[in-house]
Length: 358
Ligand SMILES: NC(=O)c1ccc[n+]([C@@H]2O[C@H](COP(=O)([O-])OP(=O)(O)OC[C@H]3O[C@@H](n4cnc5c(N)ncnc54)[C@H](O)[C@@H]3O)[C@@H](O)[C@H]2O)c1
Image (cartoon, rainbow, N blue to C red; front, side):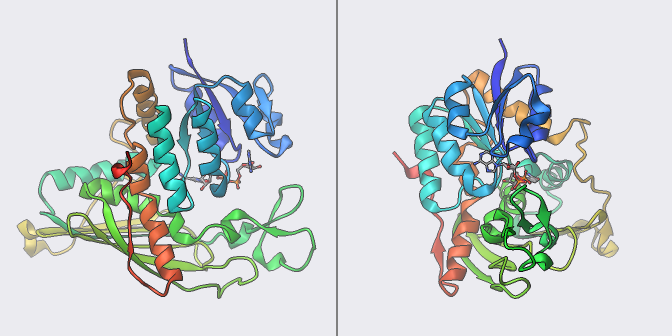
């Protein structure tokens, strides 16, 4: 018998319907979106506009929580308390208290909870993992990553759910900032950068400092343009993260790994990708070009399909999911701590380890 799956939030969630249905062990039986028009494309399934009814009435084994960020933790808690396994999009929590509640509830209910941090399953992460394993970089000492892009084009929405640019602010009384504008401190969205770095470094963060620009680009709509955090790890290494969404450039992702014997620097400027590496073993060659895959995996499989497949196997075999609740918080909570630090003038904030919860 197939696992009964539900998907809440049918923006990106539409893809989760496809990805879950593509797994032989799963069948999507119900979907939920607070905007009833989003349900039109899913006739034949159980349809809900209310998350609580969706959870209590559709007899689910798994729910994919793909709603706006601030909804994730309350909805995940409700689902686990109702006996449903949860896979949540990023950011999975918005506070240290929510993080603790998620870990505690997953422990108490025995439900399998996981953050769907897909970057860890992408081809480039596997490639860098192989480089690390072959010792080409030596011991990793410092890492940095930036995830920045312009979301100004859709930071307002009207009563019908249509999106508008920040320049429309003040032109109509019904336009409101989206959650991405008003309720997403940039470093809360740190798991795409921190997830792969901690995976490659096999480490966790213990303390954070942060600084941000405040609101200078569209102050009426978005309270923080860009934010950076410096994180100290349990192994004594350092990580630098930068996120920003109210900023004047299209998608940009950067990652740097610095080891005792070599380094890698990779950048993706809206599809224009460049990677260079250096190793002491070939010092005479200086920085060398490297053919790095982006999302594509060497096994040819879609990274989301592999990630969801591993999560579902953890449910079937009653094992820990690949990103268990504590690891899901490891790649999320340091961003919250760095943001808290920025709000407190750059003071050092300790990153809690929820493994100590009884
Ligand atoms: N991993 C990635 O690469 C990636 C990419 C895009 C988005 N995301 C994440 O996926 C999530 C969804 O992103 P999106 O772009 O679809 O967001 P979105 O703001 O477009 O909205 C998602 C949907 O949720 C619905 N919704 C709002 N409140 C709800 C509620 N209380 N209950 C049920 N439905 C509700 C909305 O009507 C909308 O259809 C976000 O957390 C985002 O950060 C991740």
